[in-house]
Structure formats: structure tokens, C-alpha cells
Length: 76
Image (cartoon, rainbow, N blue to C red; front, top):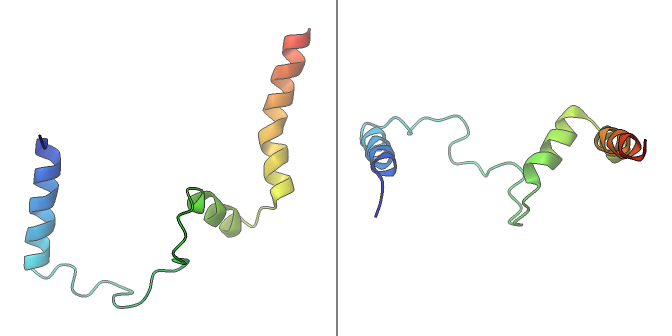
């Protein structure tokens, strides 16, 4: 059974399409950037790292720092 929210969303999208609200979107007719056809669940993270110009080492140190602190706290 489909809930009310998906039905409302579908109706609003259909109405917007009928009214031509999607006809002149920026980038219409051009391929999506970075759409290489691979199913990568971490695409958003990779794009964020690229945009923020972070290296793998920087990210690892950010993630590992709290983990090491928690482990050190456990040992005391």
C-alpha cells in the first residue's frame, strides 16, 4: 500500500511537468557530471573530498583522532 506522501509528491511532480516548470532548467539536455555509470555508494563522500581538496591522509587523521582518544580512555 502506498502512503499519502508519495502520492502527493507524484501528483505535484506531474502537475509541474504539465505546466512546463522543468522545461528550462540549467543544464537541461547535458549529461550529469561524474555520471560514469558505476554504482558507487561513496560517490558523495568522494565528491565532498574533492571539492574541499582534502587528502586521504587528512581524512584518516580526522576520523582516527577521536577513535584513538576513546581507546586511550578505555585503557585508563
